[in-house]
Image 1 (tube, rainbow, N blue to C red):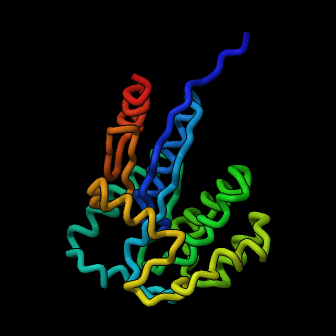
Image 2: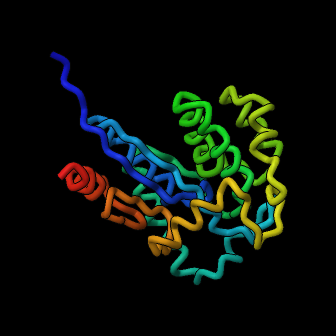
Length: 213
């Protein structure tokens, strides 16, 4: 008789320009060894004010000491997950990347997850500007995403801005984040339990156990 893994449902509030969301994604994937994960990726744009051409991270208003400490911690965590990140000097607008990923969900996990992974990798490992439409089209082509899906992804009138607008496909996620008072990304929700930030693998595993009771 075949043993079946228990199913765990998780909602993750995330953005592709958040490096700790990339780490969180990697750590969450490790749970698949023991569980069938049903993940609702809730895409929330954390810096809609950033132009698509990108800008220096110095404009994020962090002190130099705090930023250096943050990056040191990030690279230590990335190394533990087997990731070699590029130097993080530029931030960008993530709206079109989020919309592309959201549209790709309809194609199923076999197409969504390679794109999901590649968007993180392109930005944090390859230092590509995922705010650039052509870069996103190239990534989509790599992941066998059709032009039809790309055009569908960006058909909302607010796909191109302004910054204080929210495209309809992403609005429910912003509302959800507000309803649970999620203050940052990544936020992981296992039933009634919410974990925020650079959550350890151990904490994620415990939350999965708690979810199953």
